[in-house]
Length: 341
Image (cartoon, rainbow, N blue to C red):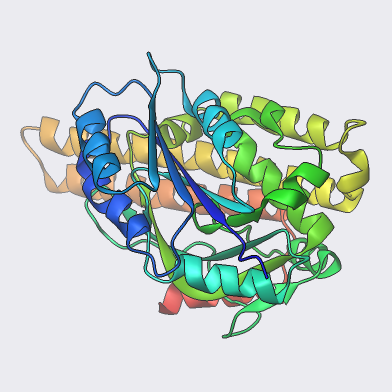
């Protein structure tokens, strides 16, 4: 019986200081990939030298370089077209695969061969290595690995379930090809589009265990993009239009598209509010430092102003939630776990 093969795809741009951890984390997995394709996207640090060193030590590593910086989508398109595995995972140089992800995911996919992909919990940390909430956040359906049918994927999403974490997803290549191939027209939102496309039509496996590490870096492209509500709005409109296009309309239930659009609009509004809150906090810090003769009146005035700002933020956040989200027991449970974590 043929043993399914796994391809690992990694894009890198100026993440030399992370490569010394992220590359060995993949090469030292108990389930070895048949190939590890790394494409450097025109880095100006010593990334190329580090990757070349690993390539010389391990024949699994296949190293390619872009002559200039092309961006995430073109880089991953190039790598995807080079891969040969039955399954594949898209990784980033600044993230890390934790021990056991490949072995446990491939075992689940062998148990449920019709599943489109398998994912796990990802630990999230900031640039200072501080732990953030995991992704996806609890609650989970079970404490042991499980499979969700396409019908249950849709049902859970409409109840408020979070999307899987792309950095831990091992995709079944045949499911992607049967769905029309990699949807490159989704652009930088490729993962976000591919996840529902595959899970709503093939179902998915999930391992409720932290098997990935995702870094939330303030200077990353994703973080910078999230600070631009207008750019987010354009992306939402493009993705919704793509879901309803002749190519994909039969693969995305309208109930999902409507719920997705509302969730994205909520997140867009929440990002705009967060940006406003951060700016106001910076303003208060400046005022407290700038006022030379800091009187009791100044202290109480600024404190009262801060309280009013917090109230305003909370009211607007609740308004957004009521407008675009649907309260469910799953969401109530998640909020409770956030408070008590």
